[in-house]
Length: 221
Image (cartoon, rainbow, N blue to C red; front, side):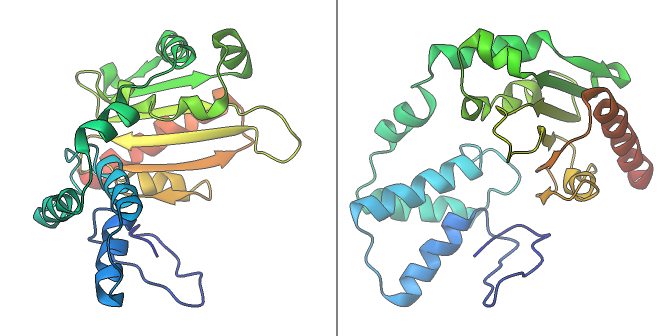
């Protein structure tokens, strides 16, 4: 069950609805079709998925259907204010330290239209943060005025099984398809939000990301 446009339909049974705002939205409609009641737990889980995948109803994947489902879930008993506090206003101090380190490591390309930041294992150690706390940091980069594409490169702790680096990509311009860039590295995602894992060095990635960014500009021209 998915809503990514580049899903390869790898399952034996695939339910992929590309114009859905989120997988949560698809699940909500599936539950209705199956006659499943929205319990408090189900409604809250679906609402969290809907809110986070639409960027609090601000991303371009937000549709009237998204708002209708939000209303349905609120009527099912979701406490929107409590969920907002728990999801967006319960930030751990080590995460804020990690945000600071990411902003200190920003590289600027094309007069700020492309921004790339990186977090090394040393950054995680100095911030006292685990790798999952890097989630959402890329949104701080996207908020920088004048950006069209941003990327965050991070190094998860070494345990012998993980790739050396994870790369998140976001675009503010509908003409830049970051999922196409991610697919070149074996990843994927949405046109405006994608990612991939790689063993390539940071300096090599900076060159590749700038090349991918300029390639998207050429296609859009």
